[in-house]
Length: 229
Image 1 (cartoon, rainbow, N blue to C red):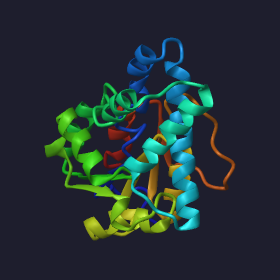
Image 2: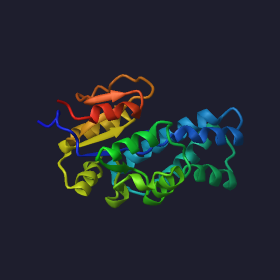
Image 3: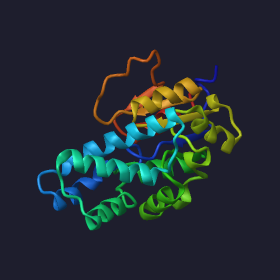
Image 4: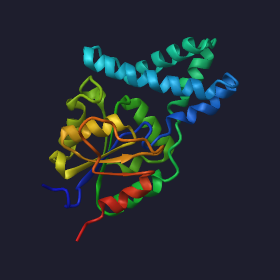
């Protein structure tokens, strides 16, 4: 087993791990006073549910479409009058999500220590390109991998295989990092070493598998990746 060998590459989930999906809350609250948090939470929940349903049913559409469909549903569910202009503003905000405070420093530290870095995300290529450009992270990743290449969504193993193929490595030579417990579990099932960014202190999912390590932020990742003697 390779558990105590340094990982050669790290693949990061994007949404919720590097980029704060709830940074749309401020704009949502401006458009719908007092409803920003509820809209952001329901929007994200339905976004994920739609990816799982479409993957299970082999009914792929890209993540931009999924995200817009989820926004429409969330607004309808909350009884909000979402006109075309407001929908466009909220969708555009998804191209400018804020990174979590530690992200830039951690990525630069790992890049400097020689790790291969990738994003492995449900996001469409255009969405991920816009996010990285807006955050100034363009030069830090060796690969920005979108499930659009295989026309399905995580947790399909074809999505995770994009990372091993990109680096020509086995799953055990990589660490997969996500803030989503379901994503970490599926990554471990695929064979990755896993690090869970457990920002809200959630319990482990009861799926018979656990992350190899976890932290309250990405700031704890470099210590996990450091060579062990």
